[in-house]
Image (cartoon, rainbow over all chains, first blue to last red; front, side, top):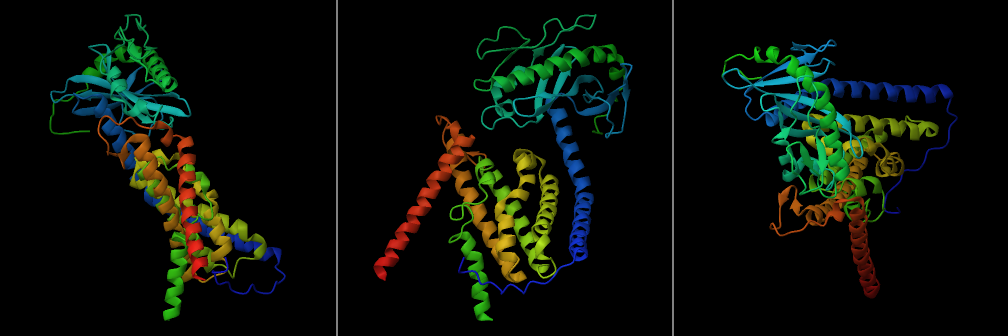
Length: 237
Length: 209
């Protein structure tokens, strides 16, 4: 480090505790101001980004939808329309086409992955009784292996028509299950990604648990969702 | 005036090459190994670290006469942590996807020893101008090093450059390269290369003398 010119270190002075505390407090105060200021300035942009990301995902998993409405699940198992996007209650996104007809429902689900929680969104068609699309919203799976659950086209093709037929009692006839690549024989099976079995299984489990819980509620309240569509092709969102 | 300008430039250049934080000082190994699995990640990490370096060097240098020696490390860490938090919010606002792919490593810039190292070894003893130049140089050197790893790893491990496929369909990705193991291989190869260059230059110098 001989190339870096250094100033002579000033002679050591007695420093009082008060001065040390004051210095630290002053720096802390400035730091606090700066962080809160940045947080305040960026928060609306970050929330907008998140909302847009979710919105894009909803229309991605419900390809036929042109508008959507948000519903919350009430504690007694009913669906209520809501405009409050910050609500903590579980949300259901109903997608409608231009004529105001219900074309599918998007649901968020999350669960443990290989490294961290995976959160995803999937589209459900109540008339076909099938999952018609799936998109991973957030995951920290191994890059290049587990992360393929987000990108692998063959894996994602599993979710274009995944059978989740439900009995009138609210039970799924064939729970979603994972099979090895090339072993898919039924519509309710998901083909695993070679080398990413754990992540594939995680997605399968998340979907199975979520469908078992949410689909009976949706089918019970299907009329509410069907009657909420408005036949306007002009407004979106 | 003229001499001062050359020294500022020297402060900048030394970080880029002669005292490159990764290839010469071998500092900041955690982000170097962890986030260089793609070109985009490397660039963002490099820029974020440079931003934190410049801001922390600036403030450490500004307050260098006010901060008592006994609490200096605590004060530097507070300054660094503040700007890391600021950087994290900014990255989230710019692109949610980039923030997601870097994950925890943005917060971990706090413990990147390049930053505390420059604050203690340089900014606390030098003027603001020189400190900022030093930070810019170190930041650029760090970004250059991350890119050297990121380009090789993404190209071999995924067959792409910044997400754009480079090779034809027949290319079988060398997956190990984007996994942690690949980071060590590539870093080792680069260190070998840079040390070879250094040795060769030293030999030449000896011959000339």
